[in-house]
Image 1 (tube, rainbow, N blue to C red):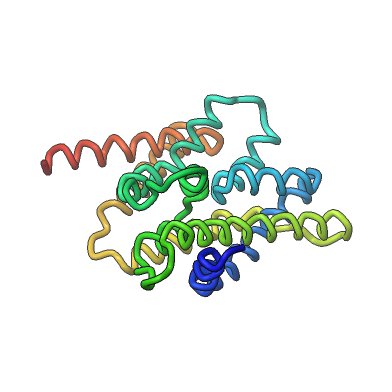
Image 2 (cartoon, rainbow, N blue to C red):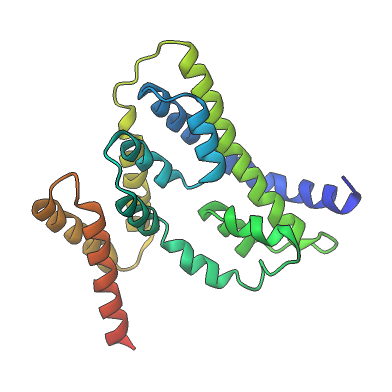
Length: 228
């Protein structure tokens, strides 16, 4: 590794340490969940490596155990990560770097990597493209390591897995609470709650998620159009 890459790595690493602490433990809960459902440790390894979308990976556990419904799986994955479309627009210029780095930056963009790469002012003398790449790679590594190590340990020992399925709902509840406390207006949150409750009553617990997300997108599109 040459001096340019070493300098970029040393600059990027401290920003990712807090994220690594959370990613390793959250990824571990995913790994334990997978093996508790009877999957080989290879599943969380390859899924965390190739998908790298925490909410989709948790939801995919249910998808893999259920009937084969590729359209529903695609729509669920698209809706859960639709926010990345907005991230991508704002990162078109920063991520316009030559070679394979651009492809990996696009693939590996998550909420945390986007926050660092879009907000941190890279010090003079540090290559920005390598800085962004190492931020993305380190966050990706933390997630894969947490999921894989916990899956290997979980498959080797017996451990109580009751309640581990609540990890994803708990994650969304914490995110919702944080957004509610930090937001000046709560119209979007109330719209999401109303759409979810209505879809739950109409479509049932097994099929409410996609209709609820479609309803939210429709409402927000109408509101935006009227505002314009």
